[in-house]
Length: 215
Image (tube, rainbow, N blue to C red; front, side, top):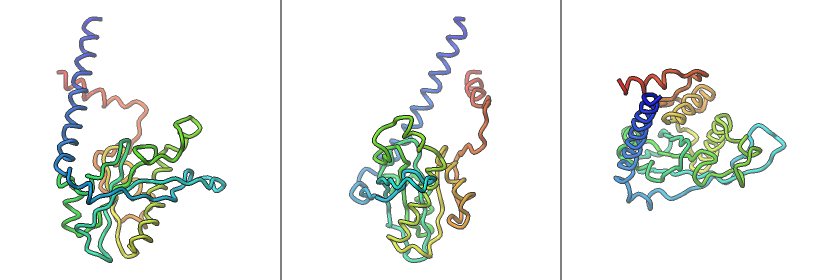
């Protein structure tokens, strides 16, 4: 029993160390772009639908996003959209020199966009997190948010001839892959970094990584 507890404590310590390291890297990236706040102000899509699958529900909400047109080549140039996940969207993302998407944007003269996920940060479609409201927190709703927002930005920025590429990592990587799969006429490509699109009820490989780390 003591051995089991010791192993559990060690596994927790390893996980905590990895978790901390992940956010150390995130903080490092954002600390190098602290001066971008003025260059990437908050923008809002004020007519996002609460429920994309109920035609009788006319409720709308404001979804936050950020843009950076520093490298944008004008009409016909591509749009790179970064899909945020289960975290607060940062205005430094669209200008971070440490983000691969932005390196590609400079090369291809793309408009950079970062869209905050519903129910995170300032993008709150409902007044509270009751069970009745959390039914609107789903990947299907988030994907519809993306295409609805896409229509909004195309009209606002006159992007009718621009090709769109979706970017995301982990859960947002799943959304990026699904966006390309479900809407091939809207997205010419996607970059899905570590997107676990294969859902498994018994995901034993996750525990294997901890076991290997202890050996």
